Structures are given as C-alpha cells and as structure tokens.
Amino acid sequence: MSQVKTFVIRRSPVVPMGLLIALTVALLVVCIVQAQPLAKIIILVVLIVLLSAFFAECAFRRIVIGQDEVTAFRPFRQRQMCFADVTSLETVKVRNRVFMTLSAGEDDFLIISNSYGNFPAMLEGLAAVVPEGTVTEETQQLMQQPPRRQADTFTVWFAVLAMVYVLMAQFKG
Image (cartoon, rainbow, N blue to C red; front, side):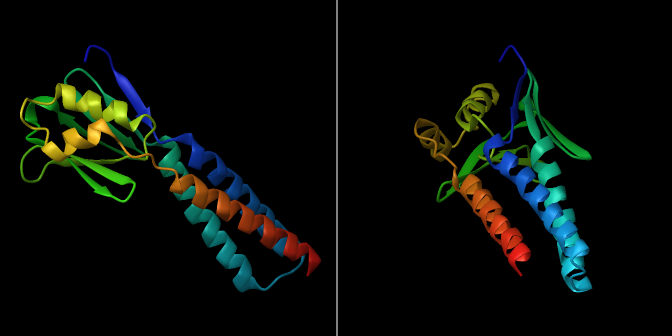
C-alpha cells in the first residue's frame, strides 16, 4: 500500500445522532420552562451527556492505514500496530455485524467493526499488507461478500422519531 488511507465511521447514523441530541436539548428546555419535575430534568441531562459522549466517540473515531502500520484513533486515545508484527487477521460475523481482529501475539490486538465506511476496502487493504499466511480462511470468504450494516441508521432514526413524538406530546400536555 503506497499511500495512507483513512476510514471513518459511516456518517449515516452520526447525522441523526446529532439531531437526536438537539431534540433532547429542546425537550430539556421545554421541561425547564414548563417547570416539570426535577427527576425528569435530571434524566434528560444524563441522557444528553451520554448521547453527546457516544456522538463524540462515533464522530471522531477513525482508522488510518499507512505503509507500515495501522492506527486506530479514538477520542483521548490511539492504538498502533505494525504490519510486520501481525500474527493473524481474523473476522467474526454476528448477523450483519462483523468484527475484524488484528493480532500481534497474545496481548496485542486491535478490534475493528464494520461500522466504518467502505469496510470492504479497509478489509482488503489490510489483507494485502499483513504478512502472508496471517489472513484466516473465514476472512478470505468474508472479503468475497462483505455484509452491509444498516441497522444502526434505522435505530437512530427511530429514536429521532420517538423524541419528536415525546416533544409534541410535551406541548399537548
């Protein structure tokens, strides 16, 4: 691989997640203005904090594949693995969810899910640069027909619709 390639989490679930946070903040403001019970306000604040942390984790996570190494960037941390040290490239498929594991010995591993955009290209790129014989047969089969992951997007849009319903009910009540 002659150039650096960067893969980020698919944006299709990240965008509605931002909308969900905005709607939850709007519901919090409405609850404060309507002098709703303190417990309800605290629950919304906790929900906003959790959703914001998850949003930041998804929005800023990326995998960078260089010439000699792969680096996983996450907020406040990063993991790096040299291709020469890789002892196996394995995949596990659970329904339409795929987890790829790069191992370099007993205690050094990197797990990557198919939540990343262009996951098939990432998998092929990694398989091309790791030492020969480290790619498992299951991974080679998976590379032929990688599954598509759309459930995350559906789930977040469903949460957005549910929050719109709750917000509208708040005005009626």
